Each structure stands twice: as structure tokens, then as C-alpha cells.
Image (tube, rainbow, N blue to C red):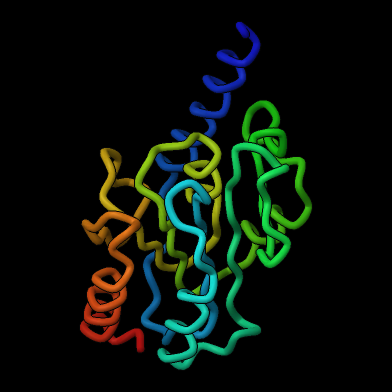
Length: 172
């Protein structure tokens, strides 16, 4: 139990370090590659995202979705990649090769579609090399370049708002 607390503090320090480092300026490139981070407890409809991106003109092959599950027994085989707390070690160490690839991919757009704060989800968002990060309302605004204040169950509102802001920012 005590080791778990120390591990969480170690990983939180890693996240704070990542967020305090300066990021490159956001490029004005159009969106071609998209990454999505989901929490299975809040939203797990992959097809809704796939259909939305297809309507935006993003190739399905250029879309990656990862899902966080509390227990790997609850994972759905239809998901691209899933991860659980066991995939994380001390000081930000990630033990899942597919998750490492996701983090290192330079997406044009990363959507962190979760509202509840989870250390593991925050670590993936902070470590991602995505150019433009979009998230739902949170206490810590350093994670995102754009925050859309909706609940995960309000996916239709999220789609409308995201499309509106991406059009305004000339990313579509």
C-alpha cells in the first residue's frame, strides 16, 4: 500500500515535469493524423469516433484510439489498444510497447476524452508528442491547447464544438 502511494507520487512528479517543459509552437498544418485517449468507464464507443473522423476527412488508417481499463479482464477485443495500471512503473516508465508507440506518434490532433482525473490517463496525455491537444474540462489546464467543457456522455455536443473550433483555427 505504501509503495503504491510512493509510485503515484513518483509518476505525478514526472507529469509535472513534462507539463512544466516548454512546448513547441502549434503548427498551422491541417489535421491528417488523430489520436484518442478514452476511459472505458466514461465512454467506450470507438465507432462514434471513427465515423466522426471519417466525416472530417481523416483516413481510418491515420486514426489511433487507446482505452484505459481498470482491469484487463474488462477489455474489449475490438479496441485498438488498451492499457491498465499495471502498464506503468515508477518515474513515468511505461511497460506497454503499443502505448509507447502511441505516445511517440506525432499526431496532428490528440483528443483526451475523459473527465475523471486518472494518473495513468494524465501521464499519456502529458507525454504525448501530439501537436494539438484537446480535452474535456479539468482542474489543470496545462494539459491541453483547447478545452471543450462537456461531459463524456455528451458526445454529439463535443463533435459540433470540436468541428467549429477546428474550422476557426483553420485545421480542417
